[in-house]
Length: 297
Ligand code: ZN
Image (cartoon, rainbow, N blue to C red; front, side):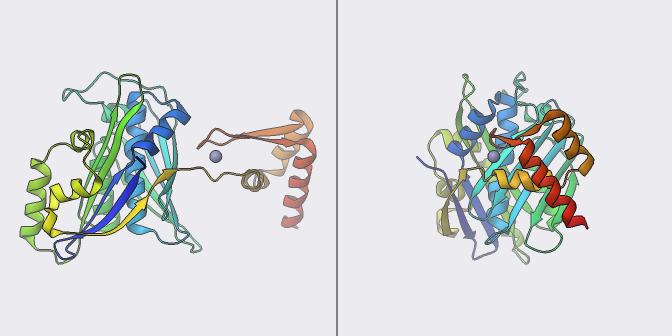
């Protein structure tokens, strides 16, 4: 079954609701980066959150980069998302496995850490990208994204993120939900939703019982209160190219480029997102250097 995200309105537009099944997407990230359980959960939850944040706030060619930088063993996490439901991401240290926490779940907080920040940079096609940054408040990530939305975007919300990892490190399920409270929403609607979120079965349990994103939203808001607006496929894909790395090389200091030419007789660039390697010959580097220095004149 292929992954998809649903966008919905609940309670006559008082709440915007999103849910996603990203099992195959996170599974692809796990295989690409050979992540172990705790790193899979940390990267996977970040991917699930980025998919929903992107769906909620981007259009057309806009894109966002989510960075989670905690003091835990996985190190930094970077995930890129766009309005079309495509994501790519990586984690600094993929080989992290930790003992289960006291709730017998993967210790995401232990993997990510509790000191650090969560930053969301949106490239909205304007001159300057918009960046919102908040300190980590939990490390479990769901609460951290909730805090980001409240602090940086002034949107009261509830975010649930889940990645279930099999014993052999493969991904069983990955997904989540995000509810955003619109201005002027009734207090009793908010109370009802909060109560339901606390009462319902954990999202990983629902997903393992093959509940769809629509059914998960219905379990929170009630089927009759929910209006599905859109169903959008989501996937992991990298859009890197040799041209893009050439552009990056052009911004390297001329002295450093010269050194790559003289000493290394070429350069090799590896894409963090997909692992692809791009080779630049001495001649190609000379052209890049020539064009870069000409531009500066
Ligand atoms: Zn790539």
